[in-house]
Length: 430
Image (cartoon, rainbow, N blue to C red):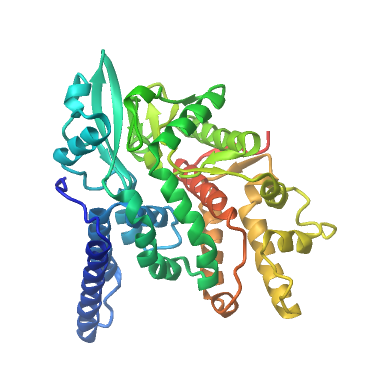
């Protein structure tokens, strides 16, 4: 994969890249509709493929918040055509890496030395590259290490990047402007946290230690003395990335065991620690040579406020759908309904949100759940498509929901998708 020798850092330079990408996408549409004049049966697959290639190429060059949004979009199988999903998923660990001189520059800024002066050996080519940083292999005193180096200028460009991708994300997520404004601050704060490797180091050590008793999990040891604000060093975990491991055709027993480890890991964080690894995409996990689930990235962690936790997880109760449960009061407290809703609006949104709770909370209301049941996911996708087309949703002038739910919902959706890829049947209520 070709390395990048620079990253556009200034607002003007980054904005011009967005404009250029928009022009290329516009050109793709012109080509597509011109061809359709002569062949009305032409499908959108070529258009989607061309657009996905151009958009990903631009975002991968920009990196940072822009590429992170693409990565987030790729986790939602219902949100984008497969061409976009497949291309944007590369942002998880296969983005174009930065050239070695830029890596050296970062090391000299924080340590006054090149990486080759600090480590016994240091790979000049990154082994993995994602949206915020890239990973190099190093050795020191006989130990193999993973060295994560952040891209230059990422933190400073987050605010301006989100302003530029906001209208695109609003369209793709199919949510109104008011809801976008409610959530954009939460997204920005989490992205800024992800650029603070000192905070990631603290959280990584803390959560790893607190989860060490859970079965079939493995965490790397971290090295504070070799780390800084933009460089994070940990032990190298040998194994395969999640998707590569699945390609080895493991037994269903092994997939179920791995799925159970994932479920238990997230349940313990959410219900016992009240903070959670909120970025469950395949690139953040390694399946070790002994078959354990290796967790290698705690850049995105959502701390769950006590008052929100008490309200949100009432939605998972076994009796939440019974006529005696005061769902209306709970929806008001969570922001699904507002006090200014008309009777017609309240009835409409009560019905829609109750349907969502029944469907998305189904795994919590049984002792075990088969995440390999594609019919269940087809129900989710069909409902998402139906809701996105409702004029009452599109035209709503009110923000609905709770900002804290954004990353909790994203965590569960990512977890569900991982379990679906495993076709795992897991115990959800021990």
